[in-house]
Structures are given as structure tokens and as C-alpha cells.
Length: 392
Image (cartoon, rainbow, N blue to C red; front, side):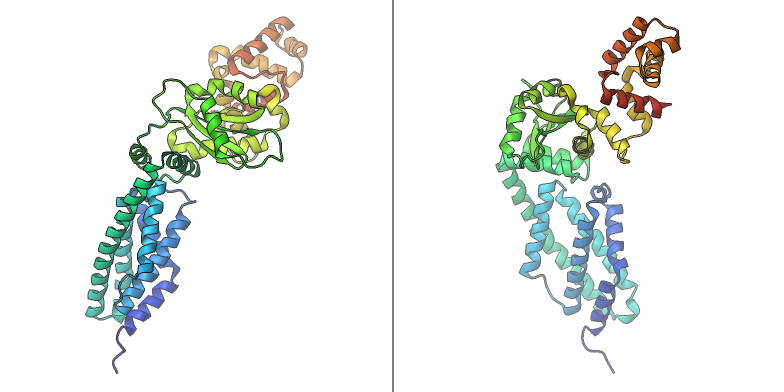
């Protein structure tokens, strides 16, 4: 008794859709073979997995029924292309990912070949070629249109660019370079990332205009780079030239704002810089902001370490906090600092090192000058203590 038309294809379709290993094989192949996708972090893979699952189901159904793409399918593919244009993932990489997925699908169907006839294999090849041709045209058109729209609304385009940088949605340095070129901007590199907001704990979400006002106040005259601004809840987040960091304390002081400036990261790690700054502002004790201090990389890394979420190795954190004190030539200053922290007073530290108290106090002033941290301040003394401890 012969089977009904397409019955074998439908059986294979149901088997493959029900097998989660097929989607995982597609995602693994795309992640391995397409460089842009290989650089995606774990937060982006669920999206790739969801698109792969939907695409697998639709392609297998087209094959099982000898169908063609419907208007709803085309709208979804155009939407995917528009999203990729907004997050800077090149359309060529997206289309290559679909070709890789098609190869995996073919291999998975071939593994079930005993259930199929030659006509089924020819139908699969015909469907994949026709579908890839159609979606290539649709996605390329939608991608180009979205890119033009983003370039036309420059303010919105720049904000979206920064939002994507903060969220880590740029899969590679090349994708970021391409997107910046399309917008005609050069990003600050080296940069400082500033997260800042009002002191009040019941503050409402900031308007984007507030962030741009802060950006204007911190502008560096004559620069060729393009600073960026966006808002995250009640905080403004700015990407500025490194030179702007020198003015942050004064500008935030005029507004009675608290802030954290990160200066030691690369453009590929803007998301890391933002996370460090935001977490630092969330977890720093009130006395860490005493005298209008703006938190720095060193503060942020110490706070991340205390929270059990270190973003750098201990020796790197120690160098950030101690600075020149890690040099052999400044060993006497580090010894003075250690004695002061351990003993709790300058007089006791002087006795332990067989120094005159004034000599010990002079060395502590040098520690302050070289590190920017006053050992007499509770928060700064704690960061210095942690740094010398993890260094040891």
C-alpha cells in the first residue's frame, strides 16, 4: 500500500520539530561558522535560538506541503532585517547565517533519508533555493530602508547606537565601525563613560533632554569625535572623550548629582563599563560620595569585588587603586600606608616603622597625592586596604 502524497515528509517534519537537538545544531553551526555570531554573548543567543526554531518550523512546513512563503512570513523576515540594521549586525552576515541553517536542515533531513523518496529530496532543495532567494531580496531591501531611516533621524540614530553599545548588542568591532561610518560619526576612543543622576532616592526617570544638557555641559571644544548620551531610568549615561573626565566633578557638583566615571575600558567593552558604573552607584555607601567625590574605575572594581562579581583580576584591581604605589621605588610609601591601616593611627604607625610622626604623615600625604585617595577618609582607606590585601 503506497503512502499518501507528502505523508513521509510530514512525518519527518514532526520528528524534527519535536527534537530540540535540531535547533541547537543550527544555533551551534551559526555560532561557529559566522564570525559576527561567534562574538555574540550569552544574552543574545536566546534570540538567535527563537528565530532558528521559527525558521525551522516554517521551512519544514513549506517542504511538507510544497508551499511558498506567505505575506506573514515576508513581514517577519523584513522585521528581522530591520532589527539587524538597528543593532548594527551586517545583512551579509544574517543571510550567511540562513544559508548555514539551511545546510544543517538538509543534513538533518538526510539523516532520516530511509523514510523519503528521491522526489522528496529534490523538493527540499527546490524549496530552500527559492526561499533563500526570496528572503535575500526582502531582507536586503528592508535592511537598507531601515538604515536610511536611522541615518535620517540623526538624534534618534545616535541614541540607538549608544543604547546598543550599552546592551552589548554589537557583535564585533567591525560591525560597530560599519555602523559608525553609515552615521558619519567617530566615537571617542579612548573614552570615559559617565553614569550620573540626582541624589534623591525617590527620583523619577530622567528625560532624554536632561542627558543632552549634561552632555553639552561636558563638551570638549574642538573635538572631532561624537559624544553620545542616553538615559537609563533615573540616570544619564554619557560616552565622552577622555579629556572630559577632568570636568565631571565640577559639573556634577553644580547639579548636586552623584556619578561614576569609567575610563579604563575599550569600545568593545562599553557594556562592561556601563555595568561597572551602574552597579557602583547602586551599591556604594553614602560616605563613598563624601565631599562630592565622583566614583572611578577603582571604586567600581572594588565594589564589584565586594559584591562577588569581579570584572577584573585581583592584581589589576590592586593596580587601579594603588597606582604608583605598586612600583618598587615607592615601596616605602606602601609600607607607611600598610602600617597606618594596621595600627589605626599615624603615631603608632611611625613607632612601628621607627619614623618620626611627621615623616609618617608626610608619606601619607604622598600616598594621597599619588593615588588620589586620602587614607584618613573611611571609604578611601577601605579601598586602599582591600587593594594592598589582594595584592599581597
